[in-house]
Image 1 (tube, one colour):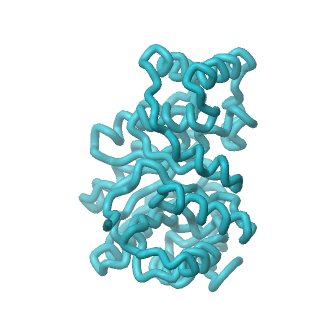
Image 2 (cartoon, one colour):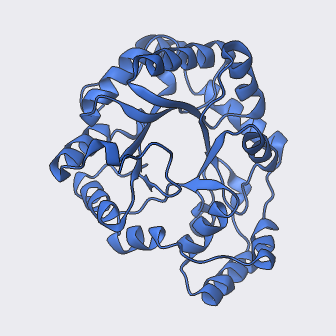
Length: 295
């Protein structure tokens, strides 16, 4: 079966840089039924993923593969970095490639246009963005006339950007949520106020008991029921399997309980987007993040 559209549940690989852990996660995911793997140039694991996938002998058409352009590569090195990503992943194309973060308008447009060019060449099937605001997306569309296929954004009970979510869904831009489970364990480092209160944790624990699921299953299903795609990550084989077992429905009143924990405004998201631009220096943009296997 050829996978052409973004699967609802994929395997996230952020921070999975130990080869054995990554191999175990991917092998378990594939056996379980996952058909989407999400990585990025800055995750420093594209090469290892390529080695693991080749060893598994997976039919490329049955896998949806996503990677992301490092912000350092936007201005001058987007196309070269894609060539390197393809070599590391041992594939002739990627199904989805994203701009990893919203920088300044010039850098965003340069990278986005380069990816659209590569899409015309067939080495990129879909072009999207990650961590982009409404205004950032609108500027890309105004300049190119092409909407992103997807916007990969933070989404958890306490950090759900409702205005951005509504805009993307109304415009037919797919949503992928990440760090869905984060506030249950520790606050998201980019959003210090994202920690759950003890009462909120109790509410979530009670819902887990009600549906006989773990917290990962509960929150991933919650996101799916709000039209997100999800990319849960774990190096624990049992968790990898459980994260895919989402064959239950959360009742509307219980969805509202989780929804009520949100404390994330559009203004706060817009401010958080600005932080990414300040992290990339002129020197980094000049040099880019280019490497053969690992950096």
